[in-house]
Length: 332
Ligand SMILES: Nc1nc2c(ncn2[C@@H]2O[C@H](COP(=O)(O)OP(=O)(O)OP(=O)(O)O)[C@@H](O)[C@H]2O)c(=O)[nH]1
Image (cartoon, rainbow, N blue to C red; front, side):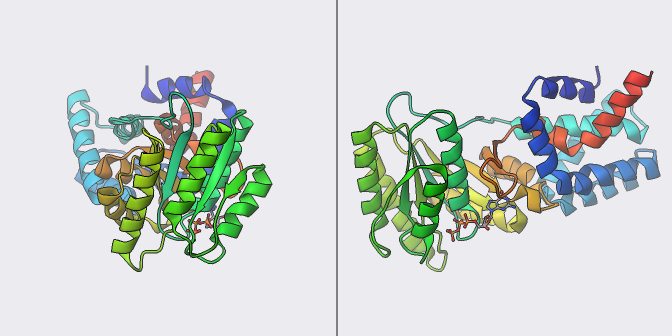
């Protein structure tokens, strides 16, 4: 059975609404990757060196990252040799198969939740990447699953950050633990953990500051927050999620390297995938950082946050080709 067929069957078993979200949100990246690959296949027809070169350009242009692209095309060459393929049109399903495999590598899918008591999730990342929005969306998600949620306004540095979180709190009906602007964020976390324990809250979502002007201070501040949370609630934080803006492309990758080394990041949230044609950055993050992409932002609305799913992602990218194959299949 062709990989597209298998993928289509696996996807159709998943919730249709989620599939549509991925398809809508990834439209720009799909044109930049699958759209161009399709055009290349039609134009070149045969798989030769020039074909691979153009394919590499397309993938690099969509921010898949040079190292990952080289790895992918090496794997493709080997597969093409093994299967004795000459016709370029047979390559699309193999490319998507390789992408799914790569995105799944060592993947620890889904958020890690506490076995009992409060799950604490700490969000880190530079200003403007979408941290507050992600926390608001996730609070909404947990609430709609019937969980009790509390948010901690740990960004005491940026004017307006506390208000912004409170605004989300009002919108989704979740309380925010806060102190005055300029207060010690670790003290906010202390209060928040105490409140979460007292009230038996299911999930505590913690915002942090993202100024990068002084890296050492930021890392020290994050470490202090981490230590307070750990001391007050052994086993927490259950996740430290680094929020990255997909529209910043390779810059997101360097932010991840910067944060990853020192702040105990356990996973990535990639926001604004809907606003970029360079969603290939997901693949680069997965393959170059060995960090799982746990959540993706696919729009500005409350329910535009999805758990990352390698199959959904690749299916959304190649949806056009997959639909065509399905039509051809049903016609024949
Ligand atoms: N299109 C789109 N926009 C998003 C997404 N996530 C966040 N945004 C927008 O990105 C902008 C910045 O989001 P914030 O949540 O304020 O960013 P932040 O990281 O909290 O910023 P600081 O509080 O300065 O650290 C807002 O206009 C959001 O609406 C997404 O998935 N898609």
